[in-house]
Length: 423
Image (cartoon, rainbow, N blue to C red; front, top):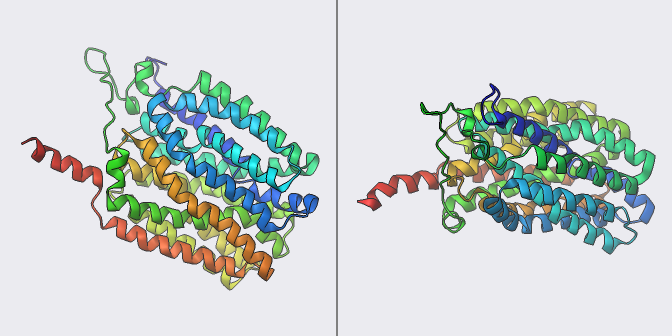
């Protein structure tokens, strides 16, 4: 714990974070599509009405992002994870009691507030605090947790839903969230290396055996908001996640709409997530050597555009096979983009607040995509125009990422101007 052993404690933090990411994403984002048909069948709700619940959840989650970010900056990720996991578990039990459409929306909203507190923002901030030179590979490993959520947890959730119903699945999600994340937060997580007398990246101590405490530097939220780079990048990521999340929610229903059974559809999701682990690790390893991540992000978006094109041209076996190859590569680096881009652009001092504000803008894409896709399916009876819509979103993201890559990084500009200001 205090650096006297050979293994850097940050790797243990990372291992626990991977488990948390797998569980948190697996019982929520990856499993959204599994609830659509059971809720339609039991309550007679339309696909638009069901997916609107997920969109409302994401809207509330996004709007609470800045507050969660400020909590993390002020109190550290550890308290956010413990409190958030406890309350998230309780809200899953509340979701299991849903019997009316308004309750579906209300309970999803409550769940979203506390899920944001225990999930994406605190773990991204946590790993960014423990790693600097190795941040790319560390975030690549963390991103495998998101893939594991689809590979390991989705098949399990399908079995639970088939055996105990959608309500039993929510009860299961609540119990397992508390049982895993609360002990992890209390016993494993530490806010920074300084809490155990260690250094970032496991750097060796000075000759006198001491560690120099790391001082977090960077732009404030207000300074970041006044830069063109922030808004161009935020809009690019909004369109990126518009496309990714729209597919994430509707991928199982899409497979079923082209004649694939529910079990095979879940297996396709699980298999893509499994291969996505390698994609994330490779992207994370390469990211430490790439000066401008925006250019690498453009490459990912190009693969996603090719993936949508494959399905537009052929939604049969051959088209789906080609789609999966491009999708696995293109979506691999998605969860890593923000924690790689934002520290380089704005520093770490106010990372949580900046990431939380970023989430508000991205939420526009997250909430709109599933609902629009559901409405298109309800009106046309197919996903053809949904695929065209997702392609257009990725194309817009590519254009904005190119513009961002041509802009100077705000943190670099500030550092270059500081000496002159001192003179």
